[in-house]
Image 1 (spheres, helix red, strand yellow):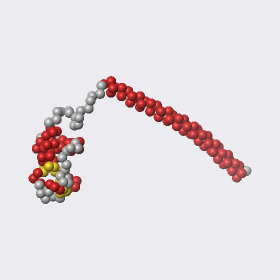
Image 2 (cartoon, one colour):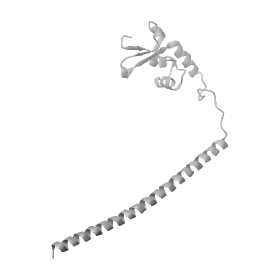
Image 3 (cartoon, rainbow, N blue to C red):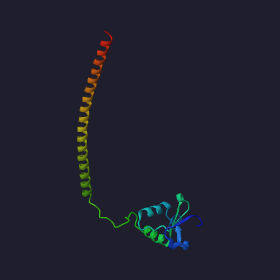
Image 4 (cartoon, rainbow, N blue to C red):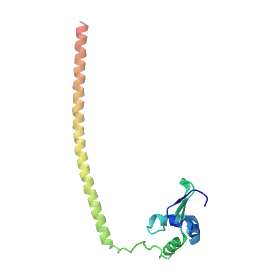
Length: 156
């Protein structure tokens, strides 16, 4: 461990033989490195990182070997598909479908209201467009009359 090191649990300085890096830990318990990364990300009781070594972008993480083995033992002894925490009671299918119907009814109501607001906004926009087009035609007619009046004055 001659590379740059950051001790996050300094009580383990001088006790490096008790540590293991996560890649070697994965190999030791027979799982992939990504499984260990997932454990670290998903479980608050994953062993705390003791030491970081290497360049800042390529850090090697070290944990206490015994803490990791105890954690891994619990993970590997779980029944497949069992939740991490206490099991939640299953909801009856009728409750799920009732909630789904309520959700979609609320969505339809919300979108119907949104559609009504947008229709009103579109109506106001079209009215404003018609007024602007009328005013534009009036302005063009006024300019044309002004040009014609100037031409009559300048060309007797």
